[in-house]
Amino acid sequence: MESFKSQIPKCMASGTKQIKLRAFSISNYAIDKKDSGLMELLASTLSGSIAKDRKMRLNPDDPQNEEDLISDYSAKEGVCINGAVLRISSSGDIPNIPDDYLDKEKITIMDLDSIQMQSSIIYKMHYYFALNSTHIVTNLQGNIPIKRFETYINWFLENIRGELMFEFIPCTTPTPQTRLSEIANMAFKNNTVGDEFESQSQEGFVKSKVSKAGADILKLLIGDTEKFQVLKDAQIISAELLIKFSKPSKMKKEDYEKLMGMYLKPIAETDDVVFTTKKGTKVKGSDILRTKVVDIELTDSKKISEPQLFQEMERFLKELKNENGG
Image (cartoon, rainbow, N blue to C red; front, side):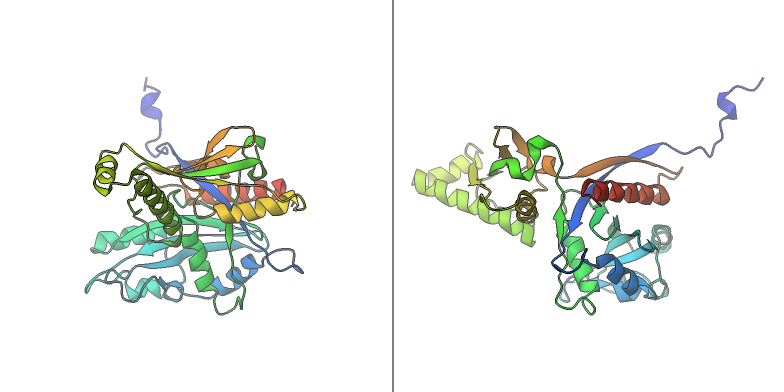
């Protein structure tokens, strides 16, 4: 009799992969409108476009020719838009993606795998997103600020958004001990005092300047530049900058939390920031962000099931909408 094990189909899926989804609200600055209108603008601009129309060059003088583009997408009218964003790079005489692919409406991740097999062309990374009228969900890795996607969206919609600038604010966890309104102070910490952070982005600028400020204060207190350098190199000293928060008595709680969320946007995605609540509880910056971990099925070739990921993203969007009284 054939064993049970031998009867298991060889095509059975090869397990699952845990993917962390991050949540952001879309700021709505139009008082006379119920939402920002981003979903409708994005849907209309994507419709009928081809891939090369969606390429954003990061810097025209960059020898690596780094570019971002929404390569693939789909839309459920009135519900959500989901898609994939690529960061591609090329140098010298090597193009990033062949013209016949860029003339297509969409380029799938499977297409990119095929391109890489045929040539030395590679793409640096990709991430997925889903958005509705009020929120954005993405699997963009935690050490990359949402500003990357925000910049791309504002660039892509530049010709039709007028003076409106879309801004994506980190959603925070609804647990009482970590609500933004309960935060009493925030401490920036850096164990390598005085060293500039690698990131040269706007987000990195904040942390870099905090680090430098802490180092300058310590130099002033120690008074001896050589001794300071020895202590720094031995990692004996570290700097910390403490910022205290207080909600104005006349400000509404929801307005205060919105302002706090905007302030925390460049820095909350790091464990170098520690918050202390009014009850004395210490919380890392990354702990207050609204995230969700989902299990996504893998194919035999270790690729994730994109339809399943997008369904989980849509489900997360619905949860966020319900939490905010949608």
